[in-house]
Length: 86
Image 1 (cartoon, helix red, strand yellow):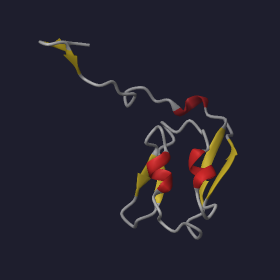
Image 2 (cartoon, one colour):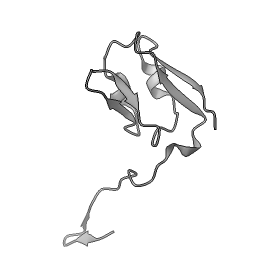
Image 3 (cartoon, rainbow, N blue to C red):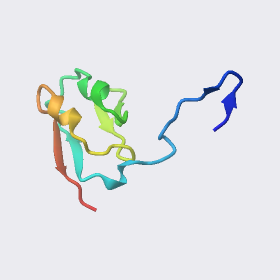
């Protein structure tokens, strides 16, 4: 990591390191229930919830760790956590 004059450095990122490989649970969307409230996108700590052109969402499973925050906070239970199959 290079540091500029004044000791300022670029913020870190995990985009280079795919972190979803050790997930135990996988989120699954039920699009028929989704009300497009955006809570899942806002609450995902890994920015793994991706907005589609039609206003619904998909998951970036390369980075999703399966924490379940999206499913726990969804007001209409449009996200279900299922056991990850390897």
